[in-house]
Amino acid sequence: MSSGSDGTKDTNMEGNDSNELNDVTGYPICSICLGNIVPGNVSFSSVPCSHTFHKSCILDWLEKSTACPCCRTPMISQEDINRAVSSLIRSESVN
Image 1 (cartoon, rainbow, N blue to C red):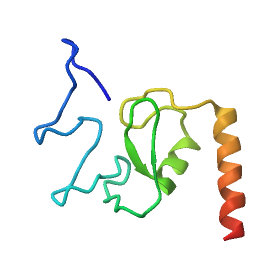
Image 2: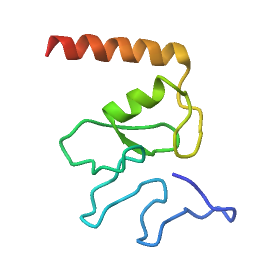
Image 3: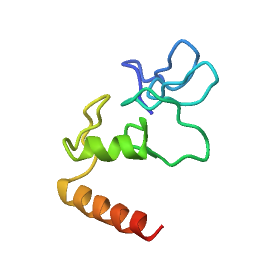
């Protein structure tokens, strides 16, 4: 959650947290591909900035950068990324 310079929570015109994009149906939008993130689909919310992405989109992004694609907040170390990607690849090969 972000705060304005006066300490208040930043919100967009719809009154939602400004870190989350929503479409007209109210579903969050992946900030990378701009597609809907439908409940039940696997998504990833970055910490600490709380932007929301499709799992495949953020994994592709994290192979190139360790910063949030929206606000450039450092997300995780390269070592953590390599470990997470390896773990996801192993878990997807089991399914």
